[in-house]
Length: 522
Image (cartoon, rainbow, N blue to C red):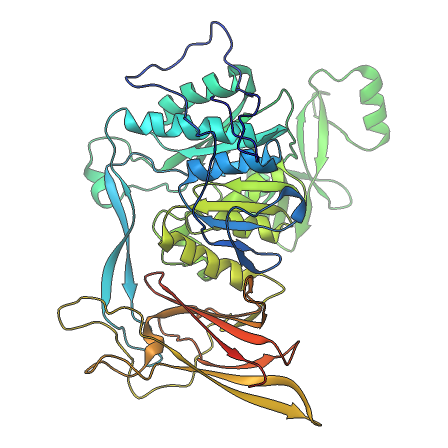
């Protein structure tokens, strides 16, 4: 890997991934390590520190600040920038779910919101394109995998999510960059069992699984074995050979294996030995039971069949973004290979499932995506999940109904830019002290002929009641759940400083951001 720039702009000493002699490598036309300029500069991008609910420039995140960062930008530049500004060797776990080289565009249907219970018009919005020239994809991933390697801690892990199209090529790249001896697992995530539709007539076995390649940076990586509950009805438990002792406790048995006589004697004193009618010694493993169910704690292997895809996950995960992954999948990886307060990285963060799972599990995180649509969806999810942010509409509560759902589309289907909004502020004094106010948002200048409900195309509203002119703190988040909910538009806002400014961000369904502010004590 070329030398990474130091924060001062001078080239730092090169720290390269291992490339052991004799390791087979993948060769393609134009193969080259990523180039890094000696003075790396990024244009300011949106970064959201979820723990501090802060928006700031991408150039400012520091490893010691303890906050989390959601960055919109080209991920190779962001990764190189992080390496050059103190983040090298800081990441305990990186998970990436990059494009699969599927030859398709991935889009979502964007629909106007409504309180009336009727669908508004919808338009197709491309989230990202996944069409590549034959060698471009391999070069694209080669550059980014080297950059991720530099950010990993010595005992850090990379989980690379892919499928049948490129898994074989990516395994070769990872062997070259990390070393063949750093391979840990090839996890098979099987999310479907039946072939329907086109899969049933494709002339081949249905493709119902993805692959997650796990590599460690160093010889050892953090790992906590994962166990899951398997519930079996008592009738089936007997058929499987499970037994009950004199006290009614269910147990299963396993062969003696290589246990010594001394170990067998110890286990027998603990009541852990079962002898068959022929005198064969087997080891007893107690099971739990609840009513008509026997509960077995099963050690998870490298084939996962118990996590459904995001389409069949709970309602709280039904965000409008293609190729999203279920939170349960990410939670299992994060719990297995990291600890609370460790740093998690996802530089293809998409809808934010990795970041949400990390946040719930008490990990720090950095997320990055080039798509403004992805950033919009991820930011909304993180706002809903953040414990320090007052959320409005968390459970999909209806805002006051309007006479008709507002629509900002013309008859030709074109989109009208987010209309300029207006803020009205009414101070609320209690015993002569100004400590809160009522904020009302409106859109008095909608285009002629359009419905007058500006809320129909708004995905989220965020309020900072103590805006300092530089850093936006998302202290209040109005993120409706479902198409039949609109933002409320009127908010009771506490005032930490009556002399301060109240700032509002409104994000529409295309990711456009409108910002306005009003004095707390006008």
